[in-house]
Image (cartoon, rainbow, N blue to C red; front, side):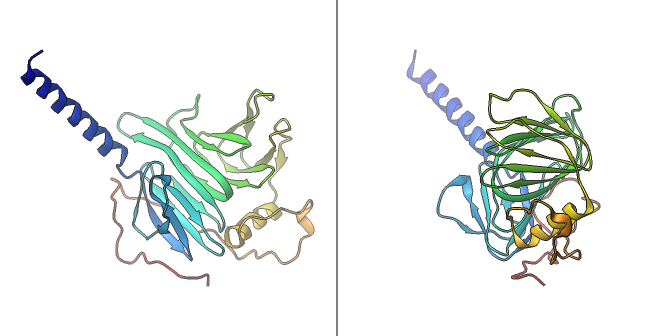
Length: 259
């Protein structure tokens, strides 16, 4: 093989690698709102730095909310992820091609409480949007839900749509379908279930925890005092104007504390 041919091959290889790196680093979302102290680890690597409103979110980024801090991310498919205080999430994978109807998403929740709204349904049979914890994998079919990840269990609360749960423990195979206004508990040492009703008291607890952060829910929350029914998660925009743009209008500002 001549030296000229080798040079051409190396040039082509370098171009392919460069395009691959560029595609890998393309933003898949952006911060809509931030309250308090929210850390961002680019590519999952230290050092962590303060996240900023309108800042792009990329694959492998890690988002950490501190005490009394929250964050909201808008992804390229109009999915909105809101993180309560003391929550850690990794964007493990995020691919979306709207014209072709293709999506491949994996979000990993290591701790805390996440509220997610997936607006676009692309596949009804096999979920193309997954959320993973150490206890379960949540397959999404166009829905809204809360995922509460505690040290020994994961609670999944489905507000609308349909969720498909599988255990992270191979000793408990099979799938559990979680319809709207139901919730389920997942533990690594137990089979999934049972499926229970999502009551107004539980919804009040979840909305409160979006401000206070995760904690062990009491066995019977119906009689719990001190919950704040006025507390709501970040407001979900009713309309997201396509196409996705990496910047926001100037009126989106960072707030330093809760009202």
